[in-house]
Image (tube, rainbow, N blue to C red; front, top):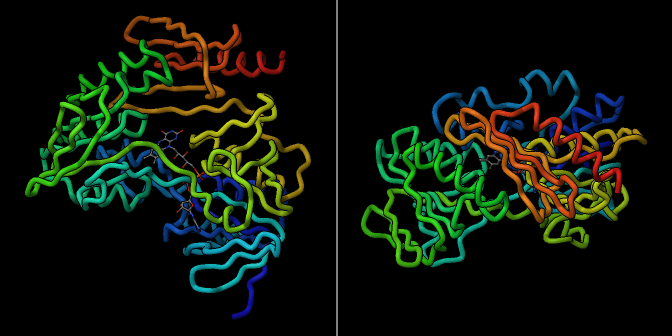
Length: 391
Ligand SMILES: Cc1cc2nc3c(=O)[nH]c(=O)nc-3n(C[C@H](O)[C@H](O)[C@H](O)COP(=O)(O)OP(=O)(O)OC[C@H]3O[C@@H](n4cnc5c(N)ncnc54)[C@H](O)[C@@H]3O)c2cc1C
Protein backbone atom coordinates (compact mmCIF):
# COMPACT_ATOMS: atom_id res chain seq x y z
CA UNK A 1 0.00 0.00 0.00
CA UNK A 2 1.41 3.45 -0.97
CA UNK A 3 2.22 5.89 1.81
CA UNK A 4 0.11 9.05 1.96
CA UNK A 5 2.17 12.21 2.34
CA UNK A 6 0.94 15.19 4.30
CA UNK A 7 2.43 18.37 5.69
CA UNK A 8 0.56 18.33 9.00
CA UNK A 9 -0.93 15.18 10.51
CA UNK A 10 -3.14 15.65 13.55
CA UNK A 11 -3.91 12.57 15.65
CA UNK A 12 -7.09 13.16 17.65
CA UNK A 13 -10.31 14.95 16.85
CA UNK A 14 -10.94 16.70 20.15
CA UNK A 15 -10.66 20.45 20.75
CA UNK A 16 -6.84 20.38 20.67
CA UNK A 17 -6.75 18.67 17.27
CA UNK A 18 -9.48 20.87 15.83
CA UNK A 19 -7.89 24.10 17.09
CA UNK A 20 -4.57 23.04 15.56
CA UNK A 21 -6.11 22.58 12.09
CA UNK A 22 -7.92 25.93 12.31
CA UNK A 23 -4.86 27.82 13.58
CA UNK A 24 -2.49 26.31 11.01
CA UNK A 25 -4.70 27.59 8.21
CA UNK A 26 -5.36 30.93 9.95
CA UNK A 27 -1.60 31.45 10.37
CA UNK A 28 -1.09 30.97 6.62
CA UNK A 29 -0.11 27.27 6.61
CA UNK A 30 -0.73 26.08 3.07
CA UNK A 31 0.36 22.43 3.09
CA UNK A 32 -1.98 19.42 3.11
CA UNK A 33 -3.55 18.78 6.53
CA UNK A 34 -5.00 15.50 7.74
CA UNK A 35 -6.95 15.09 10.98
CA UNK A 36 -7.25 11.50 12.17
CA UNK A 37 -10.05 10.82 14.62
CA UNK A 38 -10.84 7.47 16.17
CA UNK A 39 -14.37 8.48 17.09
CA UNK A 40 -15.79 7.98 13.60
CA UNK A 41 -17.23 11.49 13.44
CA UNK A 42 -16.10 15.08 13.01
CA UNK A 43 -14.90 16.89 16.17
CA UNK A 44 -17.72 17.98 18.47
CA UNK A 45 -18.28 19.72 21.80
CA UNK A 46 -17.71 17.35 24.69
CA UNK A 47 -18.76 19.54 27.67
CA UNK A 48 -22.53 19.40 26.87
CA UNK A 49 -22.45 15.58 27.19
CA UNK A 50 -22.78 15.84 30.98
CA UNK A 51 -24.96 18.95 30.86
CA UNK A 52 -27.32 20.13 28.08
CA UNK A 53 -27.34 16.87 26.09
CA UNK A 54 -28.10 14.76 29.14
CA UNK A 55 -30.81 17.14 30.28
CA UNK A 56 -32.32 17.11 26.78
CA UNK A 57 -31.65 20.83 26.15
CA UNK A 58 -29.57 20.28 22.99
CA UNK A 59 -29.41 17.40 20.55
CA UNK A 60 -26.38 15.74 19.02
CA UNK A 61 -26.82 17.65 15.75
CA UNK A 62 -25.88 20.86 17.56
CA UNK A 63 -22.54 19.56 18.85
CA UNK A 64 -20.11 19.60 15.87
CA UNK A 65 -17.33 22.17 16.25
CA UNK A 66 -17.53 23.08 12.56
CA UNK A 67 -20.24 22.62 9.89
CA UNK A 68 -19.64 19.84 7.31
CA UNK A 69 -18.66 22.39 4.61
CA UNK A 70 -15.73 23.67 6.75
CA UNK A 71 -13.52 20.70 5.92
CA UNK A 72 -13.56 21.22 2.16
CA UNK A 73 -13.48 25.01 2.48
CA UNK A 74 -10.29 24.79 4.56
CA UNK A 75 -8.84 21.86 2.68
CA UNK A 76 -8.46 19.65 5.75
CA UNK A 77 -8.86 15.90 5.20
CA UNK A 78 -10.84 14.19 7.97
CA UNK A 79 -9.86 10.55 8.37
CA UNK A 80 -12.17 8.61 10.67
CA UNK A 81 -9.96 5.83 11.97
CA UNK A 82 -7.39 5.08 14.58
CA UNK A 83 -3.67 5.77 14.41
CA UNK A 84 -2.16 2.46 15.50
CA UNK A 85 1.56 3.27 15.44
CA UNK A 86 3.64 6.38 15.51
CA UNK A 87 7.10 5.95 14.05
CA UNK A 88 8.19 9.43 14.99
CA UNK A 89 11.84 8.93 14.03
CA UNK A 90 10.68 8.20 10.48
CA UNK A 91 7.82 10.75 10.67
CA UNK A 92 5.29 8.07 9.80
CA UNK A 93 1.91 7.08 11.23
CA UNK A 94 0.37 3.66 10.64
CA UNK A 95 -3.43 3.68 10.54
CA UNK A 96 -5.71 0.88 11.67
CA UNK A 97 -6.37 -0.16 8.07
CA UNK A 98 -2.61 -0.54 7.44
CA UNK A 99 -2.19 2.69 5.46
CA UNK A 100 0.94 4.72 6.22
CA UNK A 101 0.92 8.49 6.52
CA UNK A 102 4.21 10.36 6.14
CA UNK A 103 4.30 13.86 7.64
CA UNK A 104 6.53 16.88 8.11
CA UNK A 105 4.85 17.84 11.37
CA UNK A 106 2.55 15.79 13.61
CA UNK A 107 0.35 16.85 16.52
CA UNK A 108 -0.44 14.22 19.11
CA UNK A 109 -3.80 15.21 20.62
CA UNK A 110 -5.22 11.89 21.74
CA UNK A 111 -6.82 13.20 24.95
CA UNK A 112 -7.72 10.92 27.81
CA UNK A 113 -9.97 7.98 28.62
CA UNK A 114 -12.09 7.44 31.76
CA UNK A 115 -10.51 5.62 34.67
CA UNK A 116 -12.04 2.24 35.53
CA UNK A 117 -12.64 1.54 39.20
CA UNK A 118 -10.16 -1.06 40.48
CA UNK A 119 -12.86 -3.01 42.35
CA UNK A 120 -14.75 -6.27 41.82
CA UNK A 121 -17.76 -5.82 39.57
CA UNK A 122 -16.36 -2.77 37.74
CA UNK A 123 -16.56 -4.64 34.42
CA UNK A 124 -20.29 -5.39 34.69
CA UNK A 125 -22.04 -4.21 31.50
CA UNK A 126 -24.27 -2.00 33.67
CA UNK A 127 -21.23 0.04 34.73
CA UNK A 128 -20.79 2.90 32.28
CA UNK A 129 -18.55 5.93 31.84
CA UNK A 130 -18.96 9.18 29.94
CA UNK A 131 -16.34 10.55 27.58
CA UNK A 132 -17.81 10.39 24.09
CA UNK A 133 -21.07 11.07 22.31
CA UNK A 134 -21.49 7.31 21.91
CA UNK A 135 -21.13 6.93 25.70
CA UNK A 136 -23.81 9.60 26.24
CA UNK A 137 -26.14 7.95 23.74
CA UNK A 138 -25.68 4.59 25.41
CA UNK A 139 -26.40 6.08 28.82
CA UNK A 140 -29.53 7.85 27.56
CA UNK A 141 -30.76 4.71 25.80
CA UNK A 142 -30.39 2.63 28.96
CA UNK A 143 -32.10 4.98 31.41
CA UNK A 144 -35.41 3.67 32.72
CA UNK A 145 -37.70 6.69 33.29
CA UNK A 146 -37.49 7.59 36.97
CA UNK A 147 -35.15 4.68 37.65
CA UNK A 148 -32.26 4.79 40.13
CA UNK A 149 -28.76 5.62 38.92
CA UNK A 150 -25.56 5.62 40.95
CA UNK A 151 -22.84 8.10 39.97
CA UNK A 152 -19.38 7.36 41.34
CA UNK A 153 -17.05 10.34 41.73
CA UNK A 154 -17.53 13.95 42.81
CA UNK A 155 -15.23 15.69 40.34
CA UNK A 156 -16.90 18.17 38.04
CA UNK A 157 -18.08 15.58 35.54
CA UNK A 158 -19.59 13.49 38.37
CA UNK A 159 -21.38 16.48 39.92
CA UNK A 160 -22.68 17.66 36.54
CA UNK A 161 -23.83 14.19 35.57
CA UNK A 162 -25.62 13.64 38.87
CA UNK A 163 -27.46 16.98 38.66
CA UNK A 164 -28.39 16.50 34.98
CA UNK A 165 -29.71 12.97 35.59
CA UNK A 166 -31.71 14.20 38.58
CA UNK A 167 -33.20 16.92 36.37
CA UNK A 168 -34.33 14.19 33.95
CA UNK A 169 -36.22 12.61 36.83
CA UNK A 170 -33.78 9.81 37.70
CA UNK A 171 -33.31 8.92 41.37
CA UNK A 172 -29.60 9.68 41.68
CA UNK A 173 -27.12 8.70 44.38
CA UNK A 174 -23.62 10.14 44.14
CA UNK A 175 -20.95 8.08 45.90
CA UNK A 176 -17.51 9.54 46.51
CA UNK A 177 -14.50 9.03 48.73
CA UNK A 178 -14.28 12.81 49.15
CA UNK A 179 -15.96 14.12 52.30
CA UNK A 180 -17.18 17.11 50.28
CA UNK A 181 -17.41 17.38 46.49
CA UNK A 182 -14.15 18.95 45.28
CA UNK A 183 -13.30 19.70 48.91
CA UNK A 184 -9.62 18.80 48.66
CA UNK A 185 -9.12 20.73 45.44
CA UNK A 186 -11.27 23.80 46.07
CA UNK A 187 -11.56 23.95 49.86
CA UNK A 188 -14.31 22.94 52.30
CA UNK A 189 -16.40 26.11 51.93
CA UNK A 190 -16.77 25.59 48.19
CA UNK A 191 -17.30 21.86 48.79
CA UNK A 192 -20.16 22.60 51.18
CA UNK A 193 -21.82 24.81 48.59
CA UNK A 194 -21.50 22.11 45.91
CA UNK A 195 -22.97 19.53 48.29
CA UNK A 196 -25.90 21.87 49.01
CA UNK A 197 -26.51 22.47 45.29
CA UNK A 198 -26.54 18.74 44.60
CA UNK A 199 -28.93 18.21 47.51
CA UNK A 200 -31.27 20.84 46.09
CA UNK A 201 -31.17 19.04 42.75
CA UNK A 202 -32.45 15.95 44.57
CA UNK A 203 -29.16 14.02 44.49
CA UNK A 204 -28.57 11.74 47.49
CA UNK A 205 -24.96 11.99 48.63
CA UNK A 206 -22.87 9.16 50.06
CA UNK A 207 -19.59 10.89 50.84
CA UNK A 208 -16.32 10.10 52.55
CA UNK A 209 -16.19 6.45 51.64
CA UNK A 210 -14.55 4.72 48.69
CA UNK A 211 -16.34 2.13 46.57
CA UNK A 212 -15.26 -1.41 47.57
CA UNK A 213 -17.28 -3.43 45.12
CA UNK A 214 -20.15 -3.42 42.66
CA UNK A 215 -22.44 -6.44 42.91
CA UNK A 216 -25.17 -7.55 40.55
CA UNK A 217 -28.50 -8.34 42.17
CA UNK A 218 -30.87 -9.42 39.39
CA UNK A 219 -31.53 -6.44 37.16
CA UNK A 220 -30.01 -4.03 39.71
CA UNK A 221 -26.46 -3.14 40.66
CA UNK A 222 -25.45 -2.56 44.26
CA UNK A 223 -22.52 -0.25 44.90
CA UNK A 224 -20.90 -0.96 48.25
CA UNK A 225 -18.82 1.78 49.89
CA UNK A 226 -17.73 0.98 53.43
CA UNK A 227 -20.88 0.62 55.55
CA UNK A 228 -23.02 2.35 52.94
CA UNK A 229 -24.56 1.01 49.78
CA UNK A 230 -26.49 2.41 46.85
CA UNK A 231 -28.69 0.59 44.34
CA UNK A 232 -29.16 1.51 40.72
CA UNK A 233 -30.26 0.20 37.33
CA UNK A 234 -26.97 1.65 36.14
CA UNK A 235 -23.72 2.87 37.62
CA UNK A 236 -21.87 5.71 35.91
CA UNK A 237 -18.24 6.05 36.93
CA UNK A 238 -16.76 9.55 36.78
CA UNK A 239 -13.54 8.93 38.67
CA UNK A 240 -11.15 10.88 36.49
CA UNK A 241 -9.33 10.28 33.22
CA UNK A 242 -6.02 8.74 32.14
CA UNK A 243 -3.99 10.31 29.32
CA UNK A 244 -4.02 8.27 26.12
CA UNK A 245 -0.25 8.22 25.72
CA UNK A 246 0.23 4.80 24.11
CA UNK A 247 1.36 6.28 20.77
CA UNK A 248 4.00 8.31 22.60
CA UNK A 249 5.22 5.13 24.30
CA UNK A 250 5.21 3.49 20.88
CA UNK A 251 7.44 6.33 19.67
CA UNK A 252 9.78 5.74 22.66
CA UNK A 253 9.10 9.20 24.13
CA UNK A 254 9.65 9.59 27.86
CA UNK A 255 6.51 10.48 29.84
CA UNK A 256 5.92 12.79 32.79
CA UNK A 257 3.12 11.55 35.06
CA UNK A 258 1.75 9.53 32.12
CA UNK A 259 1.72 12.58 29.85
CA UNK A 260 3.93 13.70 27.00
CA UNK A 261 6.35 16.49 28.01
CA UNK A 262 6.44 19.61 25.88
CA UNK A 263 7.78 23.15 26.00
CA UNK A 264 5.53 26.22 25.92
CA UNK A 265 5.43 25.92 22.11
CA UNK A 266 4.00 22.39 22.42
CA UNK A 267 7.19 20.84 21.01
CA UNK A 268 8.15 17.42 22.32
CA UNK A 269 11.71 16.11 22.49
CA UNK A 270 11.13 14.48 19.07
CA UNK A 271 11.74 16.73 16.03
CA UNK A 272 8.52 17.34 14.10
CA UNK A 273 6.28 16.08 16.90
CA UNK A 274 3.99 18.41 18.85
CA UNK A 275 1.55 17.53 21.64
CA UNK A 276 -1.49 19.36 23.06
CA UNK A 277 -4.51 18.90 25.32
CA UNK A 278 -5.19 16.32 28.03
CA UNK A 279 -2.30 14.10 26.89
CA UNK A 280 0.29 16.90 27.20
CA UNK A 281 2.48 17.93 30.11
CA UNK A 282 3.39 21.34 28.74
CA UNK A 283 5.55 23.99 30.31
CA UNK A 284 3.63 27.22 30.83
CA UNK A 285 5.48 30.30 29.55
CA UNK A 286 4.35 32.56 32.42
CA UNK A 287 4.14 30.09 35.32
CA UNK A 288 7.58 28.78 34.33
CA UNK A 289 6.73 25.18 35.13
CA UNK A 290 4.89 22.18 33.73
CA UNK A 291 1.11 22.41 34.23
CA UNK A 292 -0.92 19.31 33.42
CA UNK A 293 -4.47 20.53 32.64
CA UNK A 294 -7.69 18.79 31.65
CA UNK A 295 -9.81 21.68 30.45
CA UNK A 296 -11.65 22.34 27.24
CA UNK A 297 -10.37 25.94 26.91
CA UNK A 298 -6.76 24.94 27.45
CA UNK A 299 -6.98 22.10 24.95
CA UNK A 300 -8.19 24.73 22.44
CA UNK A 301 -5.41 27.13 23.48
CA UNK A 302 -2.65 24.53 23.27
CA UNK A 303 -4.00 23.18 19.97
CA UNK A 304 -3.96 26.70 18.59
CA UNK A 305 -0.33 27.17 19.65
CA UNK A 306 0.57 23.87 17.96
CA UNK A 307 -1.15 24.95 14.72
CA UNK A 308 0.71 28.25 14.71
CA UNK A 309 4.02 26.54 15.47
CA UNK A 310 3.38 24.11 12.59
CA UNK A 311 2.84 27.18 10.39
CA UNK A 312 6.18 28.55 11.66
CA UNK A 313 4.82 31.38 13.79
CA UNK A 314 7.74 32.22 16.09
CA UNK A 315 5.63 34.14 18.60
CA UNK A 316 3.25 31.35 19.62
CA UNK A 317 3.57 30.17 23.23
CA UNK A 318 1.17 28.91 25.88
CA UNK A 319 0.87 31.90 28.18
CA UNK A 320 -2.82 32.24 29.12
CA UNK A 321 -3.91 31.37 32.67
CA UNK A 322 -5.62 27.94 32.55
CA UNK A 323 -9.26 27.65 33.48
CA UNK A 324 -12.55 25.84 33.18
CA UNK A 325 -16.23 26.26 33.83
CA UNK A 326 -18.75 23.78 35.17
CA UNK A 327 -22.53 23.83 35.19
CA UNK A 328 -24.26 21.89 37.94
CA UNK A 329 -28.01 21.98 37.36
CA UNK A 330 -28.44 25.63 36.37
CA UNK A 331 -25.54 27.04 38.39
CA UNK A 332 -22.25 27.81 36.75
CA UNK A 333 -18.83 27.95 38.34
CA UNK A 334 -15.86 29.51 36.59
CA UNK A 335 -12.28 28.85 37.57
CA UNK A 336 -8.92 30.29 36.55
CA UNK A 337 -5.87 28.82 38.25
CA UNK A 338 -2.44 27.33 37.79
CA UNK A 339 -4.12 24.31 39.32
CA UNK A 340 -1.12 22.84 41.10
CA UNK A 341 -1.91 23.73 44.68
CA UNK A 342 -2.57 26.55 47.12
CA UNK A 343 -1.90 27.07 50.81
CA UNK A 344 -4.83 29.37 51.66
CA UNK A 345 -8.36 30.00 50.43
CA UNK A 346 -10.58 32.96 51.21
CA UNK A 347 -14.24 32.90 50.31
CA UNK A 348 -16.24 36.08 49.77
CA UNK A 349 -20.03 35.63 49.77
CA UNK A 350 -22.29 37.98 47.81
CA UNK A 351 -26.05 38.49 47.78
CA UNK A 352 -28.18 35.89 46.01
CA UNK A 353 -25.69 33.06 46.60
CA UNK A 354 -22.95 34.51 44.36
CA UNK A 355 -19.43 33.98 45.66
CA UNK A 356 -15.74 34.35 44.90
CA UNK A 357 -13.04 32.04 46.28
CA UNK A 358 -9.46 33.26 46.04
CA UNK A 359 -6.59 30.80 46.36
CA UNK A 360 -3.10 31.94 47.34
CA UNK A 361 0.31 30.35 47.72
CA UNK A 362 2.95 32.17 49.75
CA UNK A 363 0.77 35.27 49.53
CA UNK A 364 0.43 35.27 45.74
CA UNK A 365 -2.86 34.71 43.95
CA UNK A 366 -2.74 31.32 42.18
CA UNK A 367 -6.43 30.67 41.57
CA UNK A 368 -9.90 32.15 41.56
CA UNK A 369 -13.29 30.46 41.47
CA UNK A 370 -16.49 32.43 40.94
CA UNK A 371 -20.22 31.89 40.85
CA UNK A 372 -22.15 34.75 39.24
CA UNK A 373 -19.15 37.12 39.54
CA UNK A 374 -17.61 37.27 36.06
CA UNK A 375 -15.99 40.66 36.67
CA UNK A 376 -14.05 39.22 39.63
CA UNK A 377 -13.00 36.22 37.53
CA UNK A 378 -11.47 38.41 34.86
CA UNK A 379 -9.72 40.67 37.39
CA UNK A 380 -8.45 37.58 39.21
CA UNK A 381 -7.19 35.99 36.02
CA UNK A 382 -5.20 39.13 35.22
CA UNK A 383 -3.73 39.25 38.73
CA UNK A 384 -2.74 35.58 38.68
CA UNK A 385 -0.73 36.25 35.50
CA UNK A 386 0.73 39.50 36.87
CA UNK A 387 1.74 37.89 40.19
CA UNK A 388 3.55 35.11 38.33
CA UNK A 389 5.30 37.55 36.01
CA UNK A 390 6.47 39.51 39.06
CA UNK A 391 8.29 36.50 40.57
C1 LIG B 1 -18.52 14.75 29.94
C2 LIG B 1 -17.42 15.76 29.97
C3 LIG B 1 -17.71 17.10 30.27
C4 LIG B 1 -16.69 18.04 30.33
N1 LIG B 1 -17.01 19.33 30.64
C5 LIG B 1 -16.02 20.26 30.68
C6 LIG B 1 -16.33 21.61 31.01
O1 LIG B 1 -17.47 21.97 31.29
N2 LIG B 1 -15.31 22.52 31.02
C7 LIG B 1 -14.01 22.17 30.74
O2 LIG B 1 -13.13 23.02 30.77
N3 LIG B 1 -13.70 20.88 30.42
C8 LIG B 1 -14.67 19.94 30.39
N4 LIG B 1 -14.36 18.63 30.08
C9 LIG B 1 -12.95 18.28 29.78
C10 LIG B 1 -12.63 18.52 28.30
O3 LIG B 1 -13.65 17.99 27.49
C11 LIG B 1 -11.29 17.92 27.95
O4 LIG B 1 -10.30 18.57 28.75
C12 LIG B 1 -10.97 18.10 26.46
O5 LIG B 1 -11.92 17.44 25.67
C13 LIG B 1 -9.57 17.58 26.14
O6 LIG B 1 -9.37 17.78 24.78
P1 LIG B 1 -8.30 16.94 23.93
O7 LIG B 1 -8.38 17.49 22.54
O8 LIG B 1 -7.01 16.92 24.63
O9 LIG B 1 -8.82 15.43 23.97
P2 LIG B 1 -10.22 14.74 23.73
O10 LIG B 1 -11.34 15.71 23.77
O11 LIG B 1 -10.24 13.57 24.64
O12 LIG B 1 -10.10 14.22 22.23
C14 LIG B 1 -9.13 13.28 21.86
C15 LIG B 1 -9.60 12.59 20.60
O13 LIG B 1 -8.54 11.80 20.12
C16 LIG B 1 -9.06 10.56 19.69
N5 LIG B 1 -7.99 9.56 19.70
C17 LIG B 1 -7.39 9.00 20.78
N6 LIG B 1 -6.46 8.10 20.38
C18 LIG B 1 -6.48 8.12 19.02
C19 LIG B 1 -5.76 7.42 18.02
N7 LIG B 1 -4.81 6.52 18.33
N8 LIG B 1 -6.06 7.66 16.72
C20 LIG B 1 -7.00 8.59 16.38
N9 LIG B 1 -7.70 9.29 17.29
C21 LIG B 1 -7.45 9.05 18.59
C22 LIG B 1 -10.16 10.28 20.70
O14 LIG B 1 -11.05 9.30 20.20
C23 LIG B 1 -10.78 11.65 20.83
O15 LIG B 1 -11.74 11.87 19.84
C24 LIG B 1 -15.36 17.66 30.04
C25 LIG B 1 -15.06 16.32 29.74
C26 LIG B 1 -16.08 15.39 29.70
C27 LIG B 1 -15.74 13.95 29.38
